[in-house]
Image (cartoon, rainbow, N blue to C red; front, top):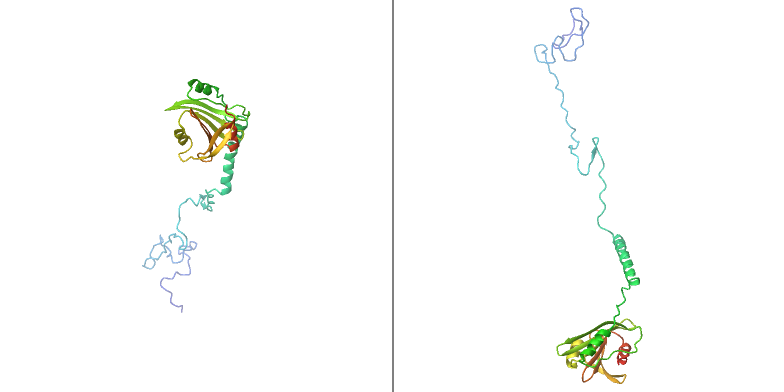
Length: 252
């Protein structure tokens, strides 16, 4: 006697009764059913639902392309190298400064060497001297016997309140400036204006038969002053004492 078969068990013999070849059915499916949900034995068949595709738990959330990631062909590329520092090194700054200074130095050399930029313009003082002589405001003297390395760079005669002035400017052999001023103004008015209010006599010196007073002046300047009844003669500048004395001794 065979053991009892379960009610839902499919018989092992799958030969149809109509003599057709056997048909294989998936496990759990009932022969003769027209769909996957056909009932078997009066109860609905359980059909497993297809699983929905879900991303893995540990996979990162998708993100779009950014400035650091450049997506090409669906594959992110490594981040680009950061830009170089904008700050310039002291060496770069020194090179840039040198590049600017070289053309300037060349222009200065050309100006001085070929155009005579450092040379003062020499003038003829004769017109200003003749104008002072014609005005006859005071006796007019002029240097005589100075070397050719003494250059006259300015000359002007002008009338002022209470008198008149004749100014002659010279460039000494050592390249220093000195001014010869002859004026009809009183010394007590002329000296504070041309030197300083604090200027004081520093002693006397004899030059070409005349007695000159040494005075202090502005800054590193010094002065020689000749006081006469009708005029005051002033020699002042940053020239050396021997050059001041040479100019004073050459006045005739």
